[in-house]
Length: 384
Figure 1: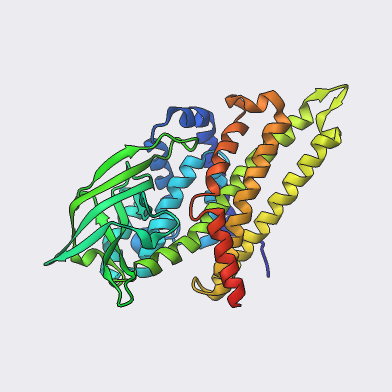
Figure 2: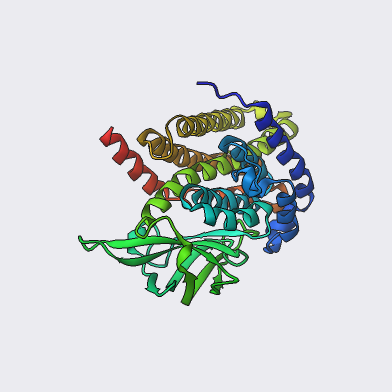
């Protein structure tokens, strides 16, 4: 098992690092301003980042999944909000279209996503259906050559700015009474919907999280993604890869916090010596880098399993959940330690570690909570 990166993968990561030099001077303003960064998003599109996983025949870069993750993780070191936009475009919208769409759908939907002309979003969660997608109440009723959607989605990343959505809805019931869930490609220009509440959040302010309201929203019948009733499968497979996306963002967050804490500990003096020389600080740094490297190993192992055995392989599903679980909780611990090492400075926004700490708290919730990850892991491991 070789976890070394190819020359192309390293090239993409360096391109992301160079882009982050443009972002860093405005990063604090970006977070405090709470406005969607249209200019920087367009810049990511110009660099090809918005179409990393989309093949060249559809206008994308056609990079492998690891190259995409390296770009996303690098951007997360400077702006978690921008990395969330990148993740929604590639992992949550681009990949499910690649995996489940017809050739005609790919030709129509992928090029505008790859170019960044259209921003994408993943609309699954509802007020009463977070960890339990089967509890959704949004419905889609077939009327002639259209499906009519009615319902409300909640906590949708970039929902306020997205024009292309994948939306999940109930289209009937199975013989056992369980809901028949289907996925739909929704173009806001063709099938208008309302943006409801824009949430006021603890962090990640430049990535809007919104309520979406569908009232008699007519979607062309040919926009069904996969077959009717395939929605749950589409969601699960998408979330499996999405977990690696979140895990990689956690690596970026944790590394950014660690490097700032390391620099601070090497410069700050108390009682006549650098503070890293005190075991209370030095041991924290040792634990931080150890946990960070352990999380990297889990993430890269999960990517390797995906490439070797495919998205539906139980080994990959379990390892992706393990990687997301450990990386997200690691990021919480590492960013918290970074605040502590900075002392009073760590509580001040100009040092940014408090921002990383607030951002890391989200990561144990999105793409399946830590509790859901543990449930997934235990179920698959008991079947092994």
